[in-house]
Length: 304
DNA sequence: ATGCCTGAAGGGTTCAGA
Image (cartoon, rainbow, N blue to C red; front, side):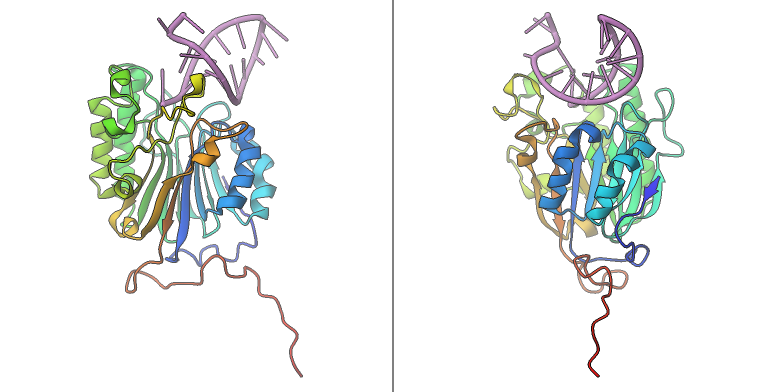
């Protein structure tokens, strides 16, 4: 479902918007529980596009809960949820076109689940993804995870050259992306087939913009709620922003918003934030005014 | 304890998460 916030004057006209924009992804672990954290965070960080995962809310309930506050902040949204588990969404204030929920040929468990929604925002085809957990290596759910990733790759392959795949991929791309590789031996998120499936997705030409920005650094996006894992920085990097080369080349900043993991009632994941510069001259499409421009034209008093 | 927290559904507990 698609909701319309703000005046909506940019809808459609921003299909080729290539100005600077801030894109974020956040597994909120229940958007209903996270409202007291999400709304202030939107006001503080002011992302132009937000990919949410684990909304755990049906679409009508999402609209009921967030429709008004999001409109007040200038966001349109596309929510794809199922009530109890899973659920993804895209929020945008730089246009929200050609929304597609789910994957037509994607696998289910056994039925299709709400794990991906795509929309074109500011000239970029944005995918908000929540990759299946996998539960145990070689389990049915693990095989479902690998099949789901292959289906995602097939969809992304057909999505043009301005692409971002953002979300909780439930895979630590390399050993440096977990606090203790030895602790994960025999567990999901680090196995060879999972990492290979992720590599196959990236082989379409997608760049892991946070790792590229912070090579060799300790960067995590998820910390277990238990045993003070966050405060000891014992986490994993499983929430990624993957961008096609023309988009990745515009990266001005890429970081994990650890502040959002602190304090009262946080998600167990932190948001990932990526700032894109204006597209270089000569790139596709007309460049229209940035989203910070007034949304409504106010009639000024005319001198007589 | 091997799920140490957190959330959802639904019911007085169980499943899921990574």
